[in-house]
Amino acid sequence: MNVIELIVFIAAAALALVGAAGMVMSRNPVHSALFLIANFFALAVIFLLLSAPVLAALQVLVYAGAIMVLFLFIIFFFVQPGQKHLYVYSLPWQTFFSGILVIVLICILVLGLYMGGVFTAEEHVQSAAMKVEELTSPQALGSALFSRYLLPFELTSLLLLAAMLGAVVLARKEGRGDMEEKD
Amino acid sequence: MEPIVAYSLVLSAVLFTMGVLAVLARRNPIIMFMGIELMLNAANLAFIAFSRHLDKLDGQVIALIFMAVAAAEVAIGLAIIVSIYRYRRDVDVDAVNVLRG
Image 1 (cartoon, rainbow over the protein chains, first blue to last red):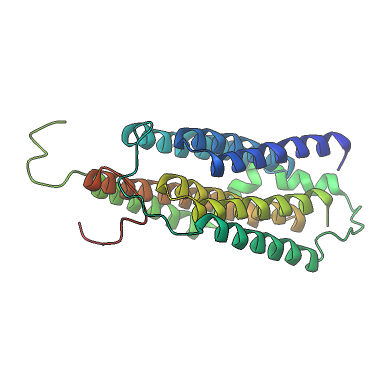
Image 2: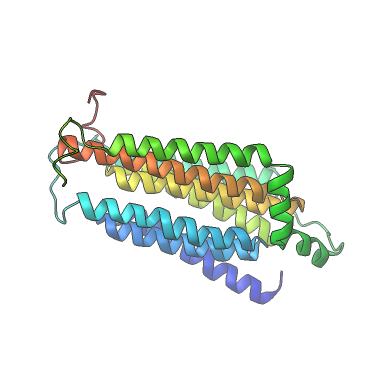
């Protein structure tokens, strides 16, 4: 890992963290969505550094493109700015206890990584360039997807079809007369 | 382990925790949903980091399939949120406690 990679990684990780924190903090859902888009772009850069260019491209296309556009669409349609909640009962101490839980969780995760020996350096000088070459190529990913992982791939397409039908059925208006009155 | 893999795993843990925080601390369902997306992305990052570490493509394939699953999940979840908005004109997850249309 040379210096340039390290600098790019630190910048992308900082952007990802800022995006995630802004997503959690900001009051306005539109700001949350925009912060999350920044986070997804930063993650795409990190995928590139981890020698997964296909997934970096798909991250930008699917997440930052399609999914976040869907989120913004819903927000623009249904959330008025400055809308007061009709129901104002909040759980007491919700933020406090969730903060404590989250701190415990991050401690457990990082401790688990530490105990798992993630941070111990190993000498792995063996032909790193050649390894990365095979990992990076889109051909290898495609042939793995269509040979060894063909069944999960096809099941994914079935899942997408079911989700499409489910979304149409769920978001449709109730009642009989919605065919005639086009709104 | 390679340093970039180790740093990516730590970043993945932190991002996952922030997603958990969004789900636990916020009450706007759209932002909670974004927190779920963030958790899925953190898991993806861990998969890709392990794929790099083990020098196998399996992690990348699983991350690819996860992206499709996340897209399906977003479509269904947002459809549910839309139908709740239609029904109540406002969405507060604590107020939606009756499963009846």
